[in-house]
Length: 335
Image (cartoon, rainbow, N blue to C red):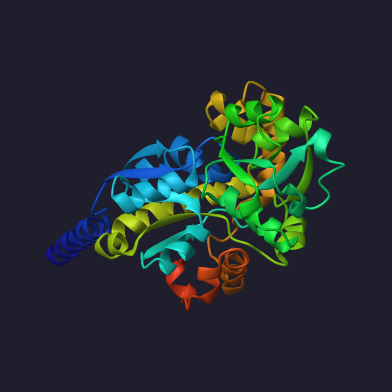
């Protein structure tokens, strides 16, 4: 009996120690995002609304900056601890000497669409024809900006010959196109689905599906990720693991969710005043979400090649792409 009591006590102590070791070093976090209502960032909203952050012992405050470039600036400046943003930012920051790394892939396809005003569709045959045009992006320097830069360069044009305007990621972006303030738009759902439904635009390039992504990039192209400063990752491994666990739960939930399930989970403000439209947008985007949370070597290379197409400095840089993604936290979840 004494032996059993002693063993039980040791087991309880071991469990307590294990819990203490697994507790996040920094439970209260500031997380940045650039356009939270966009379906590009749906895993973030699911993790928030389903209580996955709280279940991991985290108190996460989400700061929506309206564009990926702005959320990146917040991370570099120290006003946020982590960012859900485009994977390509990790590549660009490595080239600039900033050690920022992704720890889980949220989107395996960009989900970004380049569309032109319907009245200009006959004139603009390729992205190179956007010369002299005003193009709306979520924010200058964001992934939507990189996307159209790449398409213009690939078609033989120069993105510097076009004017870019930050129109955000919601109703403002729709209004900018409907009012004729821009000639073309590089954006995501539900913005694109709304413009398509209203017959305001004609799509030129669509990365919402595997087929569309391969047609544009020739293969997979990682999109949204969770990224942090490597210094933070090293100092706060349990916090990082807790964040990855929460996002991984969101990906698992999305893998079997129906559009109606998503609509019932997100805030009604995401509908842009039209729930049927939102359901259509979700259906169009479900294929984009990561199935594993891991970025392949080919995916890293594809993202780099996209940036190098229009960024001469990056094209000449000798980068170790393995430093852009730390896969150990996702692998720990699976174990």
